Length: 289
Length: 269
Image (cartoon, rainbow over all chains, first blue to last red; front, side, top):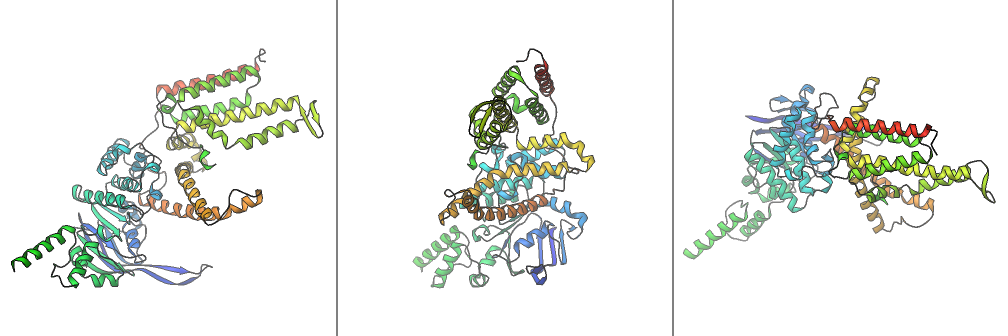
C-alpha cells in the first residue's frame, strides 16, 4: 500500500521586492510524482535549493500544493480538516536540533506531541518510555536538552515524533549540523526504527554515505525529480550525478576512478566490503589466468 | 556578567520544597511578598529572617547559589538605597553641603535594601526549586479563571516556558557573537557609557535576527507536532494536590497571620 502518493505536485511562491510587490513566481516544486510504500526507507538527495525541504513540508501538511495532489496515508493534504491527522501519521524531524525542542526536560519534550493530540496521561508515559528506549535516550529522560550533544538532541527529537506513533517519519537534513559521530547515531536510529518498528522513513540529506542503505533514492534538482532508483542504480552513473552537483560515496568514487584507469571492477560499488571483494576476485582471476 | 542571571534557573535536588505543587509555591511566594511589605519592627524582621532561613535550609539549594542571583542587581540596590538615604525629609542627622542624611532616611534605606534582597531571595527560591514547566503549569492552572475574561492564559504560559527554555541558548549565542565581533576588533569593554551602548548594536542586531529565525523554526516544529493551542490538550504531568501541599497552604497562611499580629501587637519594637 502506498503511504505517500504525489501526483503532479507543484509548489509556487511569489517573489516580492522590498515594498512587497510581486516580482515574479518561483517554482519550488514542479510536477513531482512520488510514491512511497509503507515500511520503505527512502532517501531524497539534492543540493541547496533543489526543493527537497519544500517537498518534506508538503508531506507534513505544513505547506499545501499549488497544483496537483498529495495523498498521505489516504488523506488529501489540501483538505484543512485532515491537517492534524496527517501530522500525526507523518511526523517530521528538522535540521536544527535546538530549535525543535520545546520543553526544558527531555521526557517532557517527548510528551509534547502526545499532549497535543489528547492522549490520556497514563498512555503518554508509556509512549514516552517506549520511544525514548527506542532511540536509546531513556537514561537521559530527566536531563535538560541543553546538556546533550547534537546527535543526542536529534535522537530526542526523533523520540518526540515517535511518541505520536506515526506511520512515517520525514527527517529533513537531520544530520546537517552534527559531527560525524552524531551523524552516524542518528542514521543508525532511523534504520533501527525502520527495521524493528516498520516505520516508513524518508531521509532528506546531502551526505551520500547515508543513502547507501536506503531502499530507494530520489535525486532532486530545481524542483524536479531527476533521478530515481535503488542506490546501486543511482550511483552507477557518476557522471550524471556530477552534472546535478552531487557527489558519490567515497568508496564508489574510488572504484569509479580505478575502473576508469583500466581495472575491470564491478559496476556501482557502494561499500568498502564490496570493493575489497571485487578487488580480491580480480587479483585471484589475474593469478589464475 | 551574563552567567550570573539565575532567574528562572532550576536547581535539581531532592527536598520537600521541590516536591510541593507549584500552585502552593506560587501562593506562598505571593504571601511572602505581601508579608515583606507589611512587616514592621524588629520582631517582624527577626521572624521573617528566621522563616526564610528555615525555608532555605529545607530547599537544600546552596546559599551561595542564591547570592549569585543578587550580584546582577547590586547596582539597582545601591541606587535605591542612595535615593532613600538622601531624599527622605526630616531632621538631619548629618549634613555636609547639600548632602543631608536623616534618621528616617537611614532607616528607610536599610529597610528597603533588606526588603529587596529578601524579595529576590524568596522569589528565586521558588524558581530554583520548581522546573520552569511546572511553574508555568502552576501559573496556567492558578490563573485559568482569567480565561473567561478573554486573557489567553495557556498561550501566555506557553510563551513563558519557551522563553525560559531559550534563555541559556540565547546567552550562549550572545557569547558566541561577542567573541566573533571581538575577533574582528570590536571593543565591548572600554569607553564611556555612550560608547559602550553603541558597541552593543553590532551585538544586538545579529542576536535579534537569530532569535527570530529560531522562533520561526520552533513554531514550525511545534505545528508539525500537532500543536494547536490549549484546546483538547492532555497533560503528561497533571497537577495533583497531596497532603503536604495542604499543610504548606496552612503554614503560609499561619505565617502571614503571625506577621500581621507582630505588626499590630503593642509589644512590637
